[in-house]
Image 1 (spheres, rainbow, N blue to C red):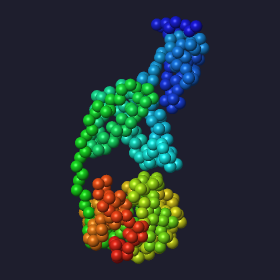
Image 2: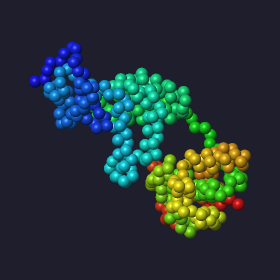
Image 3: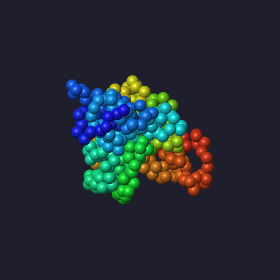
Image 4: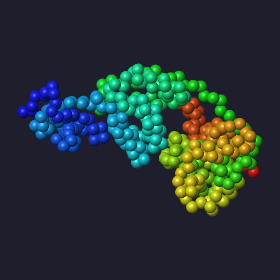
Length: 372
């Protein structure tokens, strides 16, 4: 029979929840001060197991520290494991499991490490209250856009929801917090053809080839960085992947998978670049790794824009330029949507657009030529 608990403990023992193992543990120190651990079988009630093994532990007071006393940071390994499983589902093409891209996992972990943990890491997870979450939201709103704050709080909501599912807490305080109203987007500049040409005059080498490719095909920068030499056949590029933050995966949508024709000048520049290349990607680091879109913006496009004295814009500005040039040529809307990698029409107007044969949008007179 287990001993009766005494008000004055002779030896301190506690029942802990090990989040990494998803298992309770009994922890105590022996007469020499060495910590001892006894794992509780998942098939048994942890609290009952602690008292039933009192003889094994020795005389003393057993302090029951239930799951609800778990610190917020100690629950995160379970959440990170859940993220890892979703990335695995994405990478293996699992049709049924939840999926996220590796880049999204990296972003979420950044939210946690930089914004959530500094405020809530040492707080018992059952004491993460509406007031604490509201205070976190208010502090974040002083240094970032409302939509970014909403993403951080949304990550916290995921964590707390998972804690409820695992019976660590009973109440999730986050849904009580009202989302911040997103700030209206700032007007985005779209260059005209003369400005694109001026920018190209102020860059050279593979930098110029990359910008020409963005302006002449309307491809997303993530699609350009995922291009392999095997995607180029003559003057036709096959878009079938996307590279985000160094990770190559599927295109943004199913409609983004497409073929695009390039002009003779861009074809010649790519042929010259291929002679110098030793890797599988058309654009890559010296270590033959995938380039990062943000790096290309800061190291390639922005400097060229500054040298040309043109108003600042991003790679998506070249995508808008491409769309405008196609419209100026009188290209039908459905062809523009196909070339841009968008779904034809919408839920209500899609039936009015005719189906396109793959070769219909590979026409010479619908090529945007840039670069001198």
